[in-house]
Length: 107
View: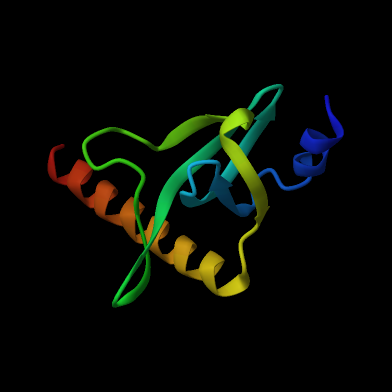
């Protein structure tokens, strides 16, 4: 495993910010680091608007609970700052609560 990947093994399970080579910014929990790729859990795309910064689902019509991103597509990976991490965890925890309520309603 390369030194680049070994740096992130300790960050598995942590909330990270990823900047892609296409200038997209993602925030997600780092799930797995493999040769050539990383697996992200519950990724959100970071968007900037007149109202501020928001984190929206990575896809709107697909199931993107986890995604694999090739390292060739990543410009940088770094720990998310404290405020962003707190917001992300709040969003993803509330998403899970809604999903669990919806599943319970279909039982």
